[in-house]
Length: 77
Image (cartoon, rainbow, N blue to C red):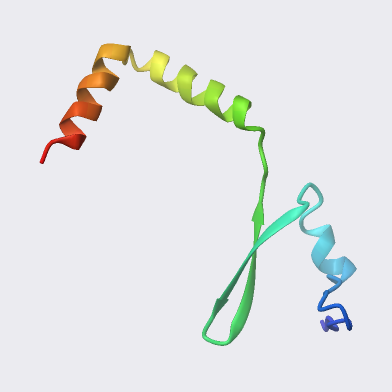
């Protein structure tokens, strides 16, 4: 499959490629060994991510005190 770069430095992904990622709007672009890699990225609202983290912490029984102690431990020299 070929993709042509436009005068505005844009690429259009071939339909065959796009069909493989129906729910993806964003890709992380990386260059390695003179090759371009596109990695699908799912963008989630910050508040929903925070809610999931808090839920995970709650399930594990971690308290605010535990978090405070962990921060103090990490900041020790």
